[in-house]
Structure formats: C-alpha cells, structure tokens
Length: 334
Image (cartoon, rainbow, N blue to C red; front, side):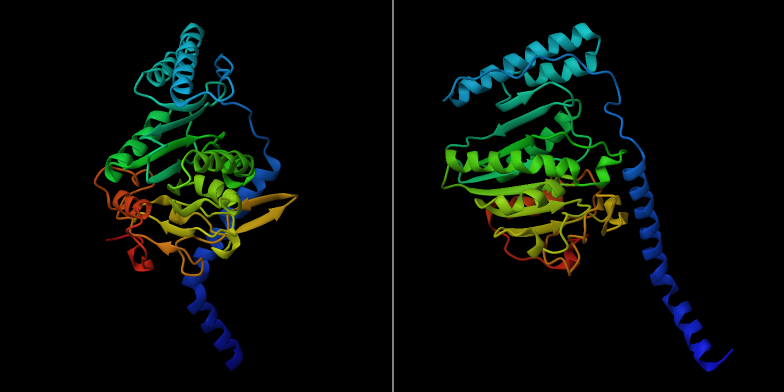
C-alpha cells in the first residue's frame, strides 16, 4: 500500500462513524421515496361512517349561533354513527355536542374537521392556534383538545387558544406523511382562518404552535401569515424549508424537540422523484436552520403540551411574549 493509499484508508476509517448515520438516513429516505412513488395510497383504512353535511349558517351569524349550530350537527352525526354501528365514533361526537364545546367549524364527514376555541376571541390580548400532526381525527380529537386545554390553563386570563383540526391529517403509517401533499392542501385554509381571527380582534397578538406534521402545514402557510407574530414548531420532521429565511415570514420562528422524541431519527433532507417531493428539509432545531430553539425537556413525541412540562412552559412564554431568546443547548434539557 502506498503512502497516499494509507492516508486515504485512514481517512475513510476516521470518517466511518460520521458516514454511517448519513448512510442510514439516505437508506431510510430512499425507502420513503420508493413507497411514495410506487405504492398506491389506500383511500380509507375502514368503511366510511355516515355523517351529515356541515351546518348551514346564515351570513353574519354570531358566535353563539355558530356554536349552537355546530353542536346540533355533532349530535346528529353521533346518531348516524350509532345507527351505523360505530359506537366509538358516536361517543366522540356526543362529547363534541356538549354545551362546553365552542365550535367555530365542524364537519363529521371522513376523518372530520373541528375548530374549537377556548377563551374569548373578541377580547383576548393573545390568541394562539394549535395545528396538529398526523393521525389527528374525530376519533383522537379529545387528546388534541386536552393539549389545548392545558395550554389555555397555563396562559391564564386574557388569552384564547384555538384547536384547529382544519385539514385531513396523514396517517403516521402512510406514504402521505413523508410528502408535503396534505400540507399544501391545508396551507390555504389555515391562512384564511388566521386572517379571519385577525379581523375579529385586530389588536390581539396571534401565534401558531405547530406539532409534528403540523409544522409542515405551518411552513407552507408561513408566507401568507402576515398577522402572526410567532411560529413555534415542535416534534418537527422539518418545515419544507432549509432555513428560516426559506419560510418567507416576518414572524419569529421557534423550534424545540424533547430529549426522548423519536422524530430526531427522521432524515432531515428532501428529494424529488417523478414529481413527488419526499422529506421536509433541514432539522428546525439545528443551528443552520436559524430558529430560536426553546427548552423542551426530556419528553417524547406526544408530551409537549403535558401539564407541568418544560415544553408547555416554554410554549406558553412564547405565546405571552415573555421569552425572546433561547439557545441550541436547551433543545433537550432545561
């Protein structure tokens, strides 16, 4: 072996530990590409549950009229689900028909759409919109809502939290969860909804908190979210951009990841094959992305809005405007 060959071999050996994770990431990404391009996506994992069309509301309907109409629609949907033999769906729909739910929008068809407000939108000084990730449907909505309740409790008086299940979320085990398709469809509705919120209360500070695949939705909507002061992504596979600058937003951008969140193992890159883009770009908590990284504690992928958690406290401070800086070292511990 010549001296040059020996030097090259030593370099390869030294590079080995660093190359292996990159190779593993490329392997996973290649598999995702193959699945997204080749494997046909099933339209539904189970037979559709019958449901009524959304409530028809007159122009200029007030908040209480909206709440009453959507709760009545949820009660009707529960009866249809019960008659169909889906007691699980019927139970969730009955819960939404309870007078304690203030539904701004509701549609029981398919996976379902729900937009619910906690607090008073018209008088709140701070309004935040929670955007959920994969596998959030009518059947799992109460879990999503519990996070909204915990956040509202932590924020206190003078605030409003909106649980926005305003799009068809992808399944965690699906080809769609690795592409921007569902996020592209959701970006327009989210942008219009935020504009409506701003119209209701122009003086309120509006923030977006985006979990998991929801951060891809927020990333796609970001250029049109001019009324938003802060966008926080957490448990994020990426935003669809390689840097904060690529989001084309004037909002402050925050990112956090719990120490036990499996999303850290997702390849943070993107490729396009046969017109399909797979992957979501740079890791939002990496220094190169340029977000303000907030402390997220040791929790897992579903722990960010748990009462008393480090992550919940960090997100509340972002919403309230009391946290203006964070450092990368705080990503997984406080």
